[in-house]
Length: 91
Image (cartoon, one colour):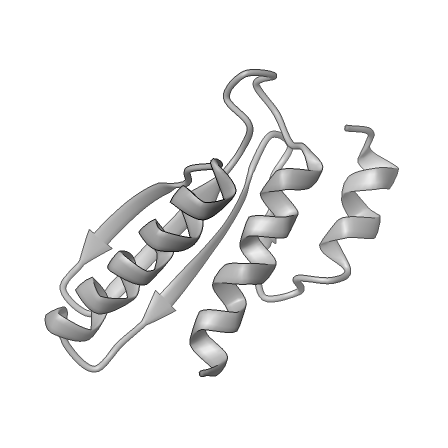
């Protein structure tokens, strides 16, 4: 994916951080239980999309990193999954 394409997709998910080969976002929660509920919901989205993020869990925060390992960089799927993860926080 070109830098221009990545910037266009990135405009739709401004809460995320855009890196050269990945996007990531940190989510904060009330406690560990809420963090894990979120992780389980992310896992369900990832399975449905067939596109799996790297997930880092800390007591009350979760960091999600998306990239397409097969191409060692970003693809449209990364941005689609990021947008679907954002929806989880809105509900």
